[in-house]
Image (tube, rainbow, N blue to C red; front, side, top):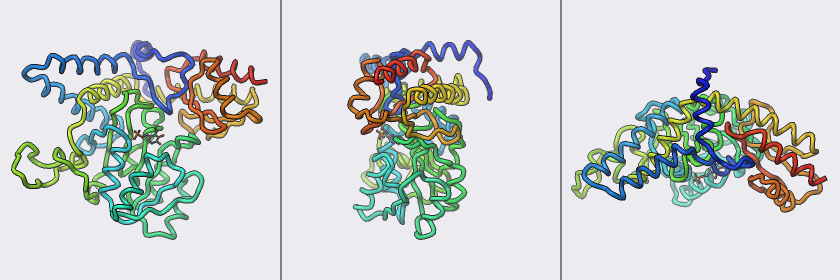
Length: 372
Ligand SMILES: Cc1ncc(COP(=O)(O)O)c(C=O)c1O
């Protein structure tokens, strides 16, 4: 692993200020001061806008996309900005035809686009069987269909299970592998180019705030996608206002709908540049270490871990329940100890990041001790 310099690591860690019991990165990753400042500076600039202000702000998109290409391994021309995971997946769903395989256990952001495109008569949806989307499960599911694409999360929002993207790629063969990467990108090391389509909002593990995200596509996907929702900025010569539809732009730009916020783009650029200053391997190693410690606390206090435990099959999400303790009570006790997390029924979902300190684990320990 290429380690960041101590100065870079210290500067990264010093840039964040979430509460020490904050363990809700799977819901939202509090951005660094540098991201907040970048967004505030962009907003201030438009407040006093003059000649060149808007053009200048719009350069943030190029910076964000260059950083997104470096992060994902996709060529710069194959990466587009998307303001959310859903927006990116809707673009893709309305650009595909044929049958798409997807598990009904996916987070709804990775279901509605397929369902809506199916309602519009663009494609058919076939369900993957319940359980983790493993290469074996995909192989079995593909045997009975003529599916041309499969959609899966890189890390499951509820179970924390990390998909074997390389294995899924092998099994998918020439079919398109569409990956919702929001719960994994920035938190784990992976070869993201296994995906034909990678979509990830930047508001969680990338810590770049809402309204940010990226959509990366392989050349195979570009050749096959027919973007019905391509808007006016997705075409050649977009500012030639001649009242006729223009040819699609080359590369991932054809998956745009319109210009998105340069304020948000400045945030994404700052967030990804900060991440690059330490590197994903370092962040991922810190997350993996904290998860290990978190699991030890849960085991010691008799909690039942319901998320993936094996290092290769997990990322930064840990879910658990406490036998005999209803979810409401569990959540209340955690909150009283200052632990911020997400409740899923009787389970609590925790997420740790590189900035999570032992103090957060101590709070969790205290809360679980109070239950006995
Ligand atoms: C797997 C997954 N996909 C997508 C999202 C969010 O989608 P969007 O960026 O459209 O809000 C979440 C969580 O909010 C998620 O867990």
